Length: 347
Image 1 (spheres, rainbow, N blue to C red):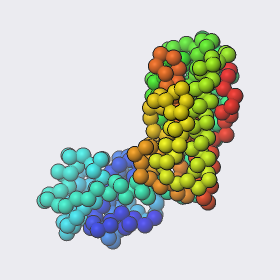
Image 2: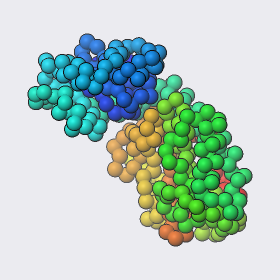
Image 3: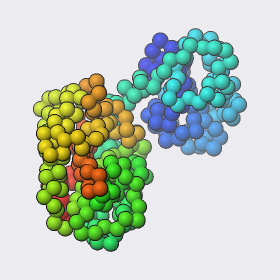
Image 4: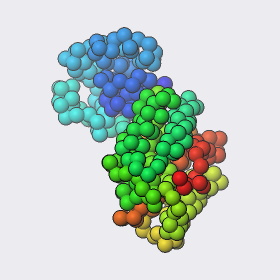
């Protein structure tokens, strides 16, 4: 990895965010700091991780085992001749800033540059994300038969977690969303003791974490015979997703246009105004990262990007529908990574 590309016109770069630390080091350990100079890139951590870092951290990094005071002193020494320092504005604490900057220095936010680097995934990164999404597909198929009257949102949430861990996930990508009936009208509902009953929709939004990378997936089902209104909403959401997928697969690369195309399908239906969030987001070390697929986005989609396409319709007090697929652009073509059925939504 070319660490010096992070310097730009700075003399030193200090990396502190957990996601960036993992991306640059290959070691999922937040209690560390990476310092990049024109000569070397250093990985600073404490004695608790001395054995682990010997084999886990990328060999291009020079590992230093230090106490907290030694870390501050070492960074300060590296800054002595620096005129401009790159830091992550959204992560560096004021306490750390005051400890290492003994004199006023010009600082530059390197967070956008790191985000650009992480936006394009390597083949190895893509392979890990695909494996994580395959675990999600398996969990969905295993849990679907458990969706019967009387089961609660929290019980299904726990069954999804168990299934993902059983099949190789180290953790969930985020706090799993399982929402029944009217609760599904909240895009980021919090699962509770709400019991499933006939005539309920079932929204499940979950992901698996594998080797530090996330996956993301949503399906909406219905227990019993769906109402005409639910069928109409589901079909509109599915057609909106397929329209966006088709646009990108046929060569469209504007993230804003992808959002517009999906939103237009919904706005031309009886559910105009009920698609209340963006079309999608990048997925990688973090569950939300670049690119952004939204009506305000300026992102241009390109090979190596992994992102969601997840239109939805939410009717307060009634139900919600969201269909989410994780996609990757490879060799100019769009691949939908998840394989779970979208057509058969009744249980």
